Length: 149
Image 1: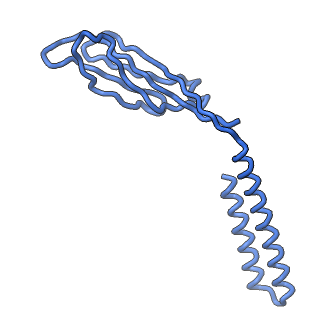
Image 2: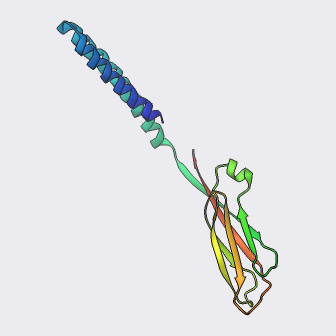
Image 3: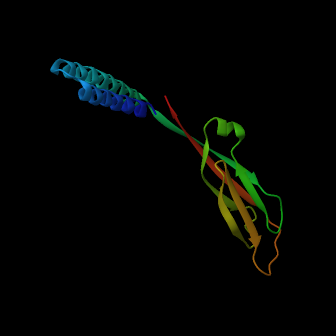
């Protein structure tokens, strides 16, 4: 955001010079307007260079966590694994997720596995046609955040 402010300063310096150049009556007035505009632009460029140096000096790291949730037993169970409110406040966002069948000896299929907003992962399973099952599904959501030091 600061870069936009600096670019605006450069633009304003240029505009100042153009307006002054259009209204100056003598060569000296035009030269003074050019010097003033150049000084303003140079100050903006120095500020931008300082911001770039600061960003280059920072080190970034990524931290991730996995949250799980288990459904109850049902014929078509569904569940959402969700990052906590505190995780969201700490900057974590859901980046991945998945589902796991809990009973491997039953025949059932995943009906849906998808993100559920910025903090959750939704899973739903169901039995195969003609083979009723009473099953559970476990959902996983992986949340990550990027921090600078």
